[in-house]
Image (tube, rainbow, N blue to C red; front, side, top):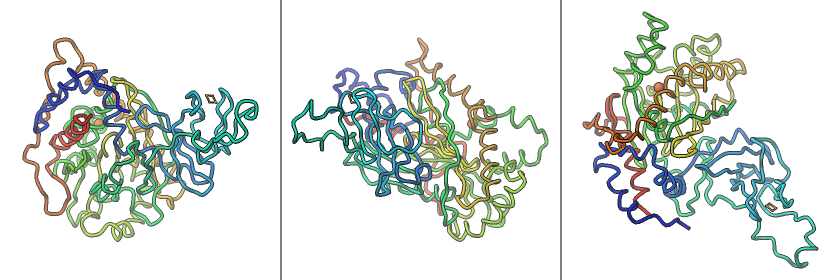
Length: 435
Ligand code: FES
Ligand SMILES: [Fe+2]
């Protein structure tokens, strides 16, 4: 049941965003009352990525995850189906799973000892006969199931809203872009590690950064580029971002920044940053599977490379670094980032290891890019909330000339644009406007 919202607060929601999305209230980034509403209206209604099927290959394998702030158990049942249960005992609410991951025959509540099967059914109550009649019906006392679970390329999405549109409709043309990272080989991808860390920012800040904030890179990451002055690879990377980069906004608040390489630039369109391709074995592997990938992706997408993108609300993918992440909200000014490294299932083990190391060096919690970004994301959040400042909206007016593209689905602009962020905040606003 939806919580009652103070009518005065409800009346303020329409004014949080200007009609074209150009002005965004700072309150989105720190206001505790709005945060409580968005937990229901945004996270209670959106498809949320909770893990990858490769994390739970066998019956009983589980992975503890989150939908917003709600802890959930992602588990494969005896029949091989993926289930998502709320991690709260139906008796008094105690979490029934307190391990990050593993294999469980049952989930045992340590408070009064109720026991639940992998499919969530209540299968044991200590001293049941002393407490309940012989014909006591336990069928409605199982773990609370999340009503909708659907997958795409092994990514497991769950939705609290039983009436939500299908995941396929929700993602729409986002899959056309995500395929260029996740669907290059017939065998698909697997995840080879997940890292988690907390940061003092609102969850929207990392999400909007990854949806296409290319403009921050030269300033924020200048120290990275200064490490290798005159490095032709670094210079070429910056040049190709400007020349071939395009930002794409899609329905339902998704979007990202991509590079479309010229037809004859065979080297440029290989996936992965140049520094990763220079690791012995990795460049050779990526080049060796390019023909298969191009065959699968077809004439347009074989030239396309994902830089970063965000699937609304909080799933982002960094294609060149082989990682996707979820910005789990942990309060109006706190986020827990979970980052997964993904790699082709059929890649050699040394390539998988190299991907993990490269991720740690770049976008892991101590990564050279992640450190730069995190500093700004905390600064944005605290800067938004100051007395005297909080009533002045943020400006998202770059790239107002975005429009259709002859080959790419969505609304497209050059890379120095904020139309992907405008699309993201319009989606957020649409959800927030519906009680
Ligand atoms: S709270 Fe779980 S058995 Fe009582
Ligand atoms: Fe960055």
